[in-house]
Image 1 (cartoon, each protein chain N blue to C red):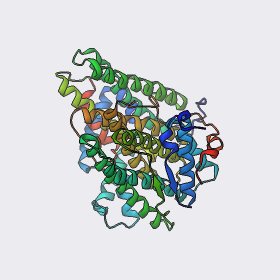
Image 2: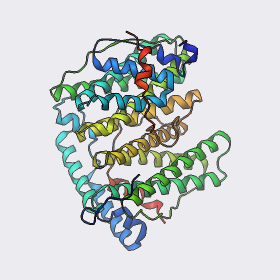
Image 3: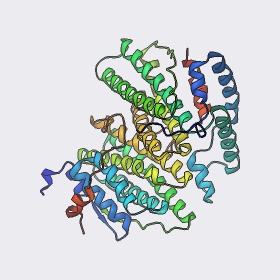
Image 4: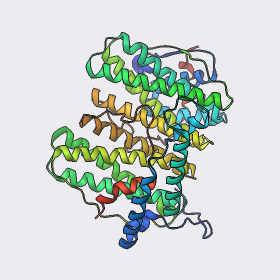
Length: 237
Length: 210
């Protein structure tokens, strides 16, 4: 990664996630807004929109509804996060921080042993590497998001495993939701490289909790920034 | 080179028939994977595509060829090698999903005014459940590397979104098979894009079956 070439003029405006991590008042306001915008509904998958655009008749989603929903959620993300790769990288960094903290607490909880414990630890180690990489990228672009303080319910092995699966599926959907918005090909390549790791983690944890490794079928669905942040909200202290 | 020297001899033995360019690249990619291991296939595929100034349609057709291969593997071999239990269930589910990828890519290429490649013919060196799962794992990881390698070269954001949606599913397949067989869930570590770029196509040349 080269040093920042960003000039003052095209420096991305401070991202919502960055504000979220730093400013409690701002965080509450943002989450309230994000929560309201969740009502816009799930965005069309990239593929559904894409197939609809190609004139397919077999897509199960209604193209009219889908494009409305995706416009609504898309503009919510745009207005609340500013624009630019830095905002996206900081968003990913915040999610990775939370994943990393989550696995550290899970590993220390004593709820897991043996193979499952080593699996969870290896996933945690990979999330740590994502944090390191994203922090470097964010630093090269501007100011990296501060580490949020996560809080996670660690009651039983079963509930924690289910939460881990939820977290990883959310992570995969979050990366997929940003792929088309990233300007830098280098950052896109990195995001894709991380995206499929989150997918591998998600499929593994789904299998462990007796869910399908591909719960959305042949085409994984993306989630917008505001959709993801609304789900993450309860896990930030 | 004898098969016992290869990192993935089963890849080198996959035969891809058909005269189109995509099947030629795929044949090279599989042969390269046989020599260098599946992790090396990603950059090899992307350099193969990038080197020739691939258009979005080239990339979609290459993806279609790969999806044809995966579909044929699950839907024909998966039904004839005597799979049992979880392996049988996964092969059936994954085969259906690969077929959906074929259908979506075919439509996308046609809608863009392109000519979807014809389905090549394949021959898979698989004789039982263990060899089936081993090759399935390798093919899915090849798929992940191929999509991740080609993704940044796509100019149309809708295609990128579609490719992302598909590659996530390929990665999920790879992980499910890994869990079933005790193979590494994340064979490339924390990042699926292999960063090194070697002149593997050149090395793989002698292995490409005519």
